[in-house]
Image (tube, rainbow, N blue to C red; front, side):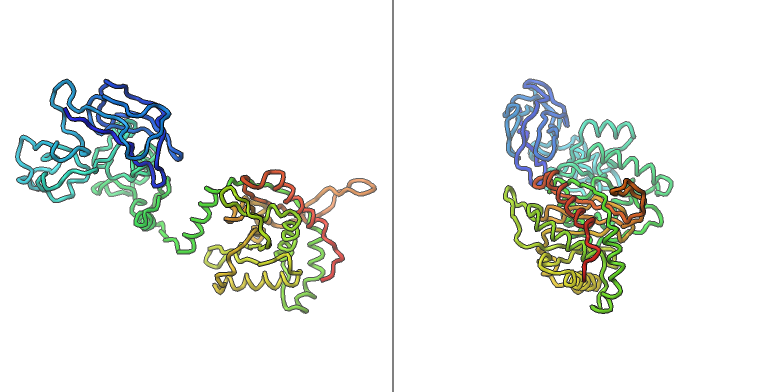
Length: 466
């Protein structure tokens, strides 16, 4: 009798162990090939471990709730129960355990006469594309793909043959095909049936895109949802900066516990003040004064008053920043985004902030920023109002813990409280959106910080000299 050792499979690059949740087969119970034997859980995914061989489960080497290391033997399966000859085992067995067929030797088979898969004792997906070789010279390795019973059931219902099933890209552990992968494939197949050539292998066009090929070449995971490409669509490869942005934003959402708070702010005094001074300021200083340096000044003032927002998180260590360095998200002509940083913003007056903002924005759009000018930021501003947006939920620029989105300023009717009673007036209103990392900034701190910024803007001194 042959004894097969069932190993705990690798569930991902960073997963080293798993907890045994529930045994699905008891000792002495017969196990069919690809039957789920045990449920396991990791810090990333829950999954079943299936047996690649048929036989009888003779030993469970880990109890429920025990932790096993990847590669450890978790069960033993007898592949020749009751003294009967076992079926040819799957390719996890050694080549010596695989018997030659009773028909013609493999080496006499030619592709023109007999299909390769009929000459071999085991079904190797995709082997029909290889040159036929004697089995002893081509040891069978872990090349058979695992399919769960649910996936096989769906494939059978949809008349998906084994060869077609083997060609579908999988997003599960070890490249396994999940239920969602198969359902998405079927959906894309039906959608492209009218434009697809039925003589070609059934395969979504998206599986051949340069983007996916590039990601696979770099061993990076692709999105779970595979986009389809229709006739006339243009496929554009990401440039280097867009790839960095995508990775940075995705990483931030995975790292930080994002929360966004909103507040409506009356900036009528600020708007009227700027309208009064902007022409004379530009003539005198040679600089246009926009709202951005004003917002930078107000945020720097708020950060100085509430320094626990001007922090970074390193594991369980809170790093309270001494400098107030404010980044301003800047859209580039090619559609990408860059965040130049105004260093020590709290130490600059409004004229200095205006010159710094204009200079950094101009050089950013002309690709002339220096490396040190886009690092060491402690807080970020993004002006979505310049695109007519009223509010947003910005993603935190790591390793910072907060980012402020500034909405468009619009005239609206508002209720004004006076000593003689309430009245309706036309005011300049805007929304501020603050996204913050709830791991370190609680709702109370985030809300009070946003309210302080709003108060500074609403209480702008209309008689201020510049």
